[in-house]
Length: 208
Length: 331
Image 1 (cartoon, rainbow over the protein chains, first blue to last red):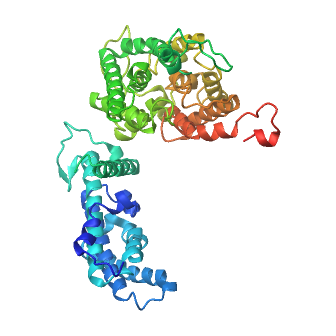
Image 2: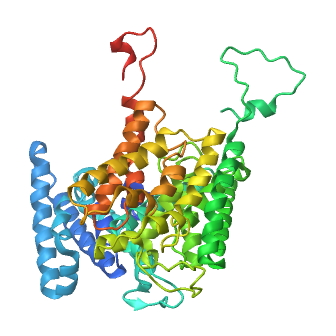
Image 3: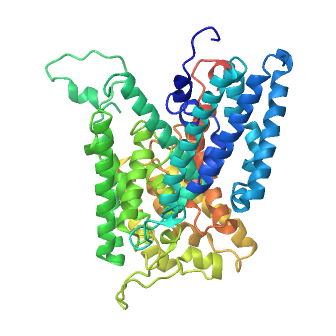
């Protein structure tokens, strides 16, 4: 892997579709299901994760030769926890309403499989620059996923997007189920099916 | 119940097959059409009590269910089985469990969910874990909680005013401790979902199905009996606080569920012991939800809950094969 020429663009692009975290890798589903009842929360959660992923990938990739293989997971978790604490405190200080809405899910980024997964699968084997692009690609893919979930659930559940009323109550009765956990699972399942359907059609050459 | 083999073979061919030689002409469309016939009294009574609005809801649910079945099978390039009537039953049953004032769009949404996700997503008729009509109703209950619990009084001879909102007998029982008279529940002169209110119409349909032999008597009687016995215990302890067993089996969706939903051939257990476990547990759960749960009506969730356990029940009640030892034959 290290010997092969690494295309930075490829590392970036794979996170946007081919390895898009919640829908193709089915990683990081906890925040995907829990905080996407509005677009705002979804994007805030996505950006926090993107920040943590970027920092942890850079640090881990930079110190990858200093960490003994036997203790690497423990070392990664400490590094990730450091960055998550920074993100959590930053959100609490600068955006208290969002921090309150996200609740325990910001500290829980520590155990988000995407972060540790990228550290283990990519950053520990690659130099800093490709790790940056890898983190950006996967992170932006994650933000996009949460935003998509948020748009669908907020639109159907409240009739609004970014707290801006789009569907008036007169013509559209909000689907309460969409802001409940059951709705999260339904939207998630539907999107996984859709993504699989499109990539299946692509790979079988129906859509070039 | 092989439908294809009987139709596919020509009459001039010699058929050599091992026993058992079935001479029955029953097939899926025949059974399903009998069930639809059996639902006619309940539908007629609902139109009588709740007016043309009820007819409109039933037609919309029926049409949306059939269209969903057709569309889903068309997209998946599967054989179109709209005519076998199973989607029609889902549509009618869903319609009968809706309140009279329910929105048309909501009815369409529920039908699409019931047939599309409740049945076709699992692989079509025979593969669905949950009763599709009840799954559709549960979805609507979570989607439109207010609309699903807004009821109207039925029209009667003496009072022909439309759309007066009123609480159901079960809600009155739960929140105001008033028990509706059994006679009103029996005839259907109470507010509630379209097809739930009249016990007599449902019993007529159910007995017709029993006469045709498509209903296993264990299921409806076991369900109602379990509800009656379990609620009867509490009624004997305190008749002022708890309603009588007769109230329980006549009020709400118990009767409709006992004859048409518990008896669903796909989502009920296949063994005799399993069927007893299924209906008795479901009856107890329904009464527990009615008496102590947050909702006035527990029939829907009792059946859905037990539907989820059917594969497990089937597995652990498998009968011992004749001649096999205890250890090899049992599950």
